[in-house]
Image (cartoon, rainbow, N blue to C red):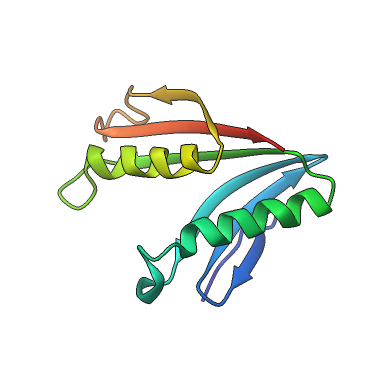
Length: 118
């Protein structure tokens, strides 16, 4: 079950989904989920490209992906930079990568903003 905040929208395909928000002609990607059986087979690229096409059809030409990554034994900085690289390969530009602690209780968090104008 997918639970959305009141301002979030859902873009869904058989192999995954994207949770996002829009404001005027801008879109903010909150989360991309690819179902486990489809990972590492190009479906992440497909869903993001399809999503971008859908947004441009709605006259949305600015997209931003913003995410935090908690570094722990399951999520490493290498995983984080692979995710950044994934978005860069799709034409997103790094606006900011912040290595400061987002929360003093969790000093190993990273955050990144990536932007794309279509």
